[in-house]
Image (cartoon, rainbow, N blue to C red):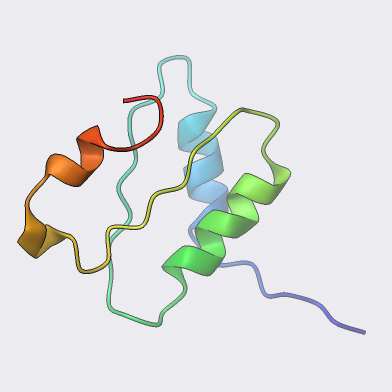
Length: 72
C-alpha cells in the first residue's frame, strides 16, 4: 500500500483559494521540506484551472521571469 503524506499546509492553501476573493499565495520555506510536493497535491485535486511556476534560483535573475510565464 503506497500512501502519500499530505503536507500540513495543503488544506490551509485550499481554504484560502476557495475564498470569495482569493489572493495570490506565495509559499516559501527551507529547501527539501515539501513545498513542491504540497502544491502538486493541491493542484492534483483542484477543479480550477491553474499554472505552476517554480522560482528556484530565479530571485537573483530579477523579476522579468514572471512576465515570461504563459498568460502574462
